[in-house]
Amino acid sequence: MDPGEIMAVMGRNGVGKTTLIKCIAGILKWKSGYSIVAGQKSGNNKPIAEIGYVPQAHKSSFSYSVRDMVVFGKVGHNSYFAVPQNKDYQKADDILERIGIKDLRDKPCNELSGGQLQLVFVARALVNSPQLLILDEPEAHLDFRNQLRLLKLIKNVVSEQNISCIINTHYPNHAIRIANKCFLLGDNDYQEGAVQEVMIDTNIKKYFSVRSQTLYTTYEGIQIPTFVFLDEV
Ligand SMILES: Nc1ncnc2c1ncn2[C@@H]1O[C@H](COP(=O)(O)OP(=O)(O)OP(=O)(O)O)[C@@H](O)[C@H]1O
Image (cartoon, rainbow, N blue to C red):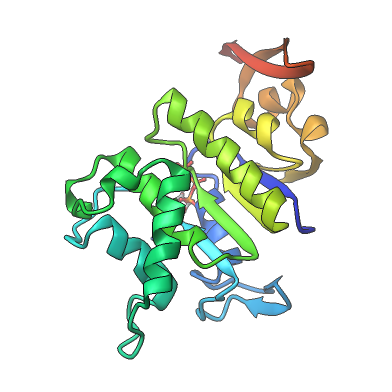
C-alpha cells in the first residue's frame, strides 16, 4: 500500500479478516511468507513500532484512567524505564480532544461503554504517529454520529499525516465512503483492487450471498453510493 491510502478488508463472519490483519501487524505468525511494513518484516511476533493496531473493543478490566491508557500507548505499557513526560500527556490530551472524548480523560477504563473504549483504543494507536494504522471493526460499538466522526477522523489523519490504513469492516457503505482500496476475502479466493471496482453488487452476492442494489445520493456536490440489502440469495 502507498502512503495516503486506506484499504477496507471485508468478508463474511469467520472468513479470517482478523487473522489476516493480526498477521500483517505481526501479532500472529504467518504460516509461510511474511509482510513488510515500513521496510521491516513482520510475522516474527515482534511488534513493529510503526504500526498502530486497534483491536476490537470488548470490556476492559484495566482500572487505568483513559489518559493513562493513551499515554501507555506512547511510552510502552511494559517498559519499566519509560516514564511518561509532560509532552506525552499533552499529546494524549490533544488526541482525546480531537476524537471528542476529552471529558472521559480521568475515567477508569473499566467503567467505559464498548463504544467509548473503542475510541480510547483509537486514541492510543494514534498517539504514536504510526505509519500504518490497522483497525479491527472500529465502528462496531459506535452510534451513527460517532461512526461518522470516526470515519472522518481516520480519513483526515491518513491524509494529513500521509500514512496508510487498513480497516476491517462489516459495512460496505463505510468501505466505499472512506477507502481507496478493498480486499474482499472469501473461503477459496479473494479480490483486491480499487474500492469502486471491488465493492459492487455482484461481489456482495458472490462473497456474502446477499442481493443488493446500489443507490446514489448527492451531498455537497459528491455522489455517495449506498448499498441497500434486499434479500439472501
Ligand atoms: N485463537 C483461535 N484459535 C483457533 N481458531 C481461531 C482463533 N481465533 C479465530 N479462530 C478461527 O479462525 C477463523 C477466522 O477467524 P477470524 O476472527 O479471523 O474471522 P473474521 O473474518 O475476523 O470474523 P468476524 O467477522 O466474525 O470477526 C474462524 O473460523 C475462527 O473460528
